[in-house]
Amino acid sequence: MEGRARIFGDDVNTDYIISSARKRSSIDASSLAAYLFESIAPAFAASVQAGDILVAGRNFGCGSAMEVAATVIQAAGIRAVLAKSFSRSFYRNAINNGLLVVECDTSSVTEGDELVITLTANAAEVRDVTCGIQLRGAPLPAIMLRILDAGGLVGFLREHDGWNEPTA
Figure (cartoon, rainbow, N blue to C red):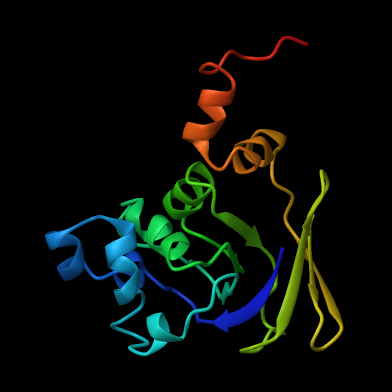
């Protein structure tokens, strides 16, 4: 996965991602994408390009546990979020909806850097092509990689006729 870094700081809560006022009229991610981050970066939604990668600090996605925060990011064409840490509810909502989330030290990444993300069984590798830095992300459990490969939890369950615990 390749894309342009779009930088945010620490404690980006779900109401910053998509405001509560917007969620009152609709939770359709496609219609809400035009309002992505409007309260903290009003011009952001208009500047997003398909394939952009969000890069944030600590505690990304804190606040409300509504999954629309993850799906509106996807609806805007963003395929991955890198952060030093995520709120647990946002992290699971992202994985369950097929949005890649990678925990890594993002402090060296700057706005507009070209990033390449490679997933392996042992880690998520993030290469910052612009400044030649390699970041090592926390590994994702095998089941999460399978869910992401299927495009999210619904796709995974469709592919596997529900979920049956694998036998050893």
